[in-house]
Structure formats: structure tokens, C-alpha cells
Image 1 (cartoon, rainbow, N blue to C red):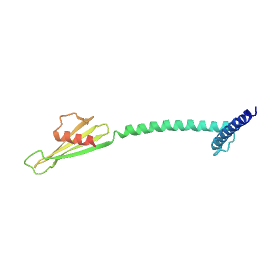
Image 2 (image 1 turned 90 degrees about the vertical axis):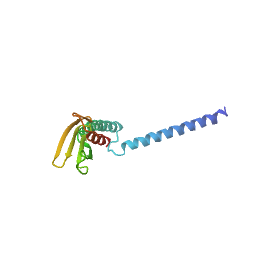
Image 3 (image 1 turned 90 degrees about the horizontal axis):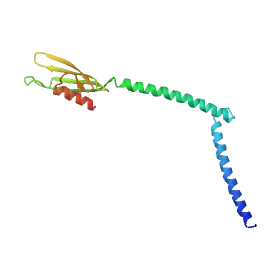
Image 4 (image 1 turned 180 degrees about the vertical axis):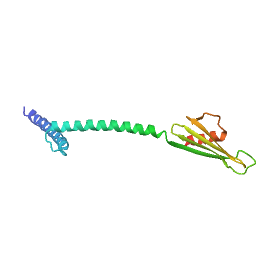
Length: 151
């Protein structure tokens, strides 16, 4: 019996030490909960936390919807532009003609081509849907669109 008594006392002391550590941990956690509040009742504190959590959840849902709307609207603005200069006629000097591609985030927009000759400059506009022309495109127009899409 004398040999078992120190063992039981040792087990008891270890158990008391474990309970003390758990108690201090719970006590510290409780103090962190009540630190920034006038309430000292744990139920009221937890109720306030739940109310704040629901308000935050509603705000997050609303903000998520607004962000999605902004992203969707953002694709309809001009985002991709490219200019290709070229010389379509051998009798004129320099690359005075151009093709300008102006596209939004969905690759919709227009391509504007200006053909410059000695007598006049003609301007043509062609619509672009999803990166493809509704009308037949010249190689310069196709190049301008391809360069704009890369940006």
C-alpha cells in the first residue's frame, strides 16, 4: 500500500496540473470575448457576436453581387485597341493608310480602315462580334484585330 500511495498522489498532481492549464486557457478565452464589451454575461456576448455575424454575412452577399455587376459591366468598355499602318497602293509614298481595331472585353467592337490615295482618303467601318468580322476582312484588318486581342 505504501508503494501505491506516491503513485496515486503523482497521478493526482498531474491531473490537477492538467485541469489548471485547461481552466486558465478557458478563462483567458473568456476574457478575450468580453474584452471590448460592457457585457459580462456570456450569453449576451455570444448573441451580439451572432447578430454581427449575420450583418456581416448580408454585407458580404451584397458586396459580392455588386462586384459581379462591376465585372460584368467592365467587359463592355473599350479594353483592346490596336493600329496597323500599311501602304495599299504602290504609287503613294509611306504607310499613310491604317486599320484601327477597337474591342471590348467580350471581343466586340469595330475595325476602322482608312485608305489614303493621292486624291482622297476613304474610311470604312466594320462591326466585330466575338473577334470575328461580319464582313470580309482585309489582311491588315485581321492583323489589327489579332493584335488587339493579344493585349
